[in-house]
Image (cartoon, rainbow, N blue to C red; front, side):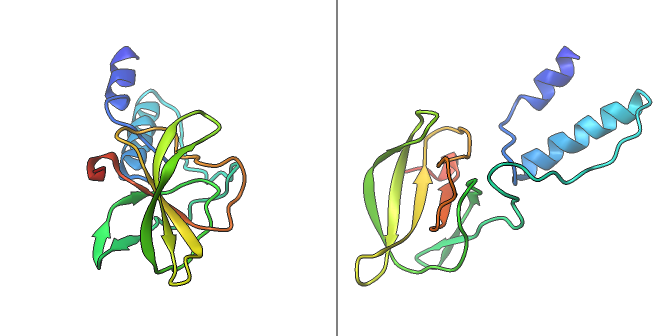
Length: 139
């Protein structure tokens, strides 16, 4: 059991990422090897369902991002403006940028940290979309 825990704990496994799916498959295989029947069940949870991985382009270049719970969705276009660190209810400090339109109205946010932390930025649904940049793309 300790070997399994070490194996699945090597990398973060955030919802919506490929690592999440890899760990799910490892756990299914281990359970089936010891005789359990398994099936994947889609569960709704607080914050909503991640239906599609978010997509982000900056200067026409695709940027890998993670989903953010409670975030809205949609297509937005604008200019990035750095904002002060965002604190979440978990007290993680996020570096943030707001996406503003030509009239300086906020249309969405991009957030990042130098490490992986829980992907729930806010504690209630946002009317604006959030995009979370992977730590390797930080800076």
